[in-house]
Image (cartoon, rainbow, N blue to C red):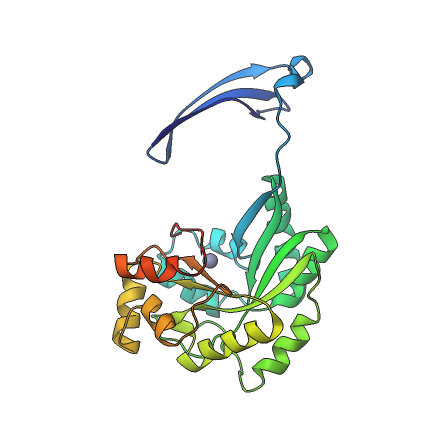
Length: 267
Ligand SMILES: [Zn+2]
């Protein structure tokens, strides 16, 4: 599908502003035409006041690390991040501040973040006065390649989550989840669902992101990720499936019965 976005005002170099026409073809920016403008002379009667924008997927404790490791392949990148990029909570807090401010500058007014160490991220949300949600990530297995991400002691999962849930407010919601099917046993997935019902919160996880992750799930659990969740009886409106780019028609029908998919693009 093609679109032409006209008369967009964007930042230019050296404190100038540009008026841009942006042509989008088949989902990609095909052409940008810009002309310098004097912001003082822009007719504001043609401006729109818009509602807020939601950034539905942020990793505040990882984005800067990822930029540092940009040249690596995904398996190597995640593997390196899981072992060599150790941080203190203070560093996590500062990283989260930078990433969240960046998102604010991009126009997001509500944000959804994922974190294995959620406390510094919750603090950053508070200090910036943001609205949104933070998923507290727990992993208990590793069926992928390379080094495993942080593994949680899930014996006391309910107690640990209940302490994190104490930070839940109307502005900042506390969710539960895992990195992906590769990082959560069937038992843990069922426990997430029970906790989501008990606390009236949500479960978030990356799922079916690329052929490889689906094939690994078929190999280790005997079926595709969406079918697995369905068989475990946990697919309901409390589950948010992140990405879900690699699904067949039957899985689309299974998903269509309950909720929405977050960020249906793989990165
Ligand atoms: Zn993600």
